[in-house]
Length: 247
Image (tube, rainbow, N blue to C red; front, side):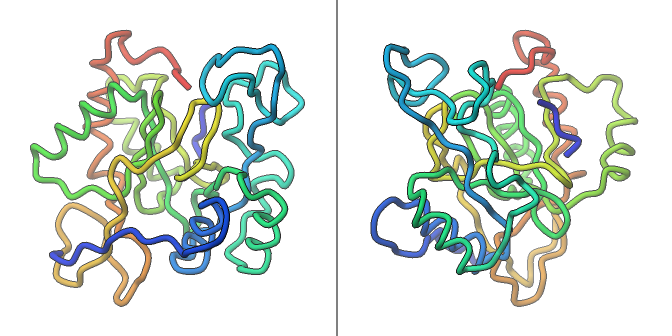
């Protein structure tokens, strides 16, 4: 699935909640950061089935597709359009499904993201660090890393990619209408974690990213233009040439 969809560093603190941590994470995203979220489909027991692509032994996607390529890592019921920042709805969802993955609906006023295979992601972060680039949150699984960026339009993204000689198919773009699973979810690929935890705006810091909103409580996000070159280059330099769409 390809979606064309300062000095003060805040510590990542999710709301305390009883039971699984997903509810606290969902509430932080929705109410503190105003990121619309919804529960992902999650996993179900599958007796007699091995570990497969990830998750625990004997687990498969809870959706009806027995060949699902992103087990547990996508919306199903409700669909992505149901994503909300409403606290009551968040509590109702995760009270009924406490271990459901936390899914961010990307685009609009919410963050967008670019994801790439994990090996290429590590190379890209090293390159960006070497340039002194300030990065936003980076979500990781065993197979893919996703860099969160400030909201971009399809037209803006198209202009940036048109200038590239080659854009590998292993890159996925999570924009308007897309989604991304956030920590501390567990999917068929295993645990989801912050490779780079969210940091927060500083009014004196403007270089290398999108203008932070004054007084914003949401994590700081770079502009897509600041990171896309490094992500394309790292994916093109991957062992398989960046052509394989690794989930």
